[in-house]
Image 1 (cartoon, rainbow, N blue to C red):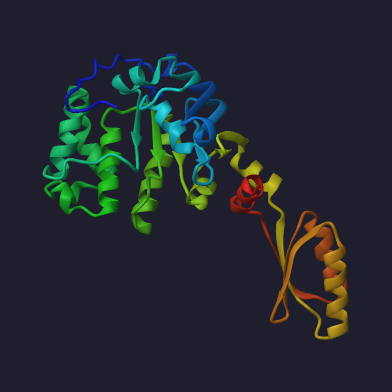
Image 2 (cartoon, rainbow, N blue to C red):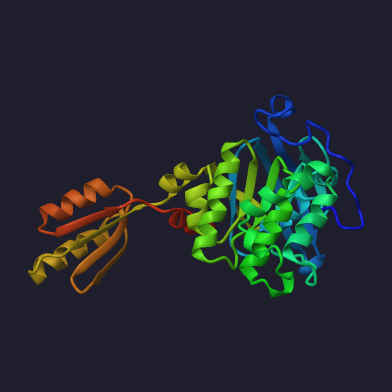
Length: 330
């Protein structure tokens, strides 16, 4: 990514994908492409395959969540996508360019967990400084960027006096000043309160609707569920699932069922015995007379429970969390 010491070359009109803009209609349909990418660390018994044969294509305007447990390879993948590290094998292209060139042109930007800010500068000075590296158009965008990042009330505050969530919003503003066609977010809402998180994703949704490509890694599964059109799940350096978020959730997550058992102990015991023998029911539990379970064929199980005398029955849709657990448990 550009630093204070390295002024990027001026962006050309077609560097950034924007609908209804000069270069929007001519932008390539593929925003990001990784082919056969491997990135290993160490050797022998200490070898770590952080990324192990990754193939991934993301098209312009997609909102993609990158999920996986710690050590899955998400951050390493994002680092290569941003040109911060090189793959040991394979190729990475951002709008047809090597990632470092795309970053210098302002075609891709990021909000990362790592990387510090200059503590003695104010918020306004920090944003204007980075904007100056991208030319007059970026400087003109500073007021709107400060508004988008909800920083207008903090422009005079020194960065050192900002909370963790506020500093994350400063990084968000820095990523926006070049008006990148592709925005990479690594745990973007870490440290933000509920209101700030909601505002952040409102801005991201509007940007995605305007054609910006957004790729984000998060541990908040509800964020992926609410905002990602597509979810890519990584585990041990490989992609184990890549599908529309709703399809992934439904395809791998059994529905939850809850019901009150009959008051008769013998009837209740018979229901539990049949459920535990069934291949369709899992996680069968009873707490204070309330039965809970997961079922692949929820309609059939629900009908059987009602016929057996259960009442107050509830069925809940599968969540992305259940799908994620199914994909990443050993």
